[in-house]
Image 1 (spheres, rainbow, N blue to C red):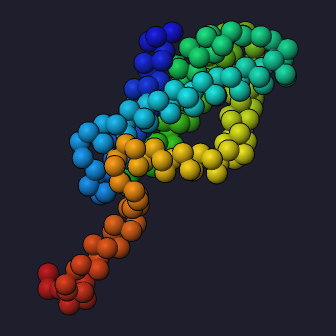
Image 2 (spheres, one colour):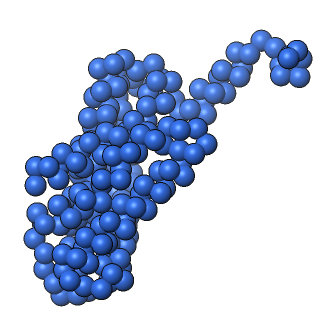
Length: 188
């Protein structure tokens, strides 16, 4: 179980590197704050995995009438986080978002395969339970989106010591305003 939790935590850090590092660098966040932010990403990954595991367990019990131990579900879901160890590749220009989508798709397939194997059910049933658990999790996120947004702002302030977060588009717009010569006047 410890290895499973460590795997999920490391996948969360890798995902934080792939999705947040550019914004953190652009906001000129210090090293300590950068590391703090990545550690929080790892913790949130653990929380997300726990919620996904529990929601899969609820769907399995409601649809198939089967019970599975929460610790077994957590180990099962952690196997799905193996591809996400490569989430830092989302930093690759142009291809990064596609790579991220492939990694998340692989994660889903692994969880469904593990679920089918563990419960000895048909692959389509396992996929339906994994998707059902994910949908249940998305519904909960929608209901809690406002409180989570407030928490996100607070966590940003605590980990980066900055009151406001500038997104990448704002930073790029500011850089283009600083350009002294318009592109049409430049000589190659």
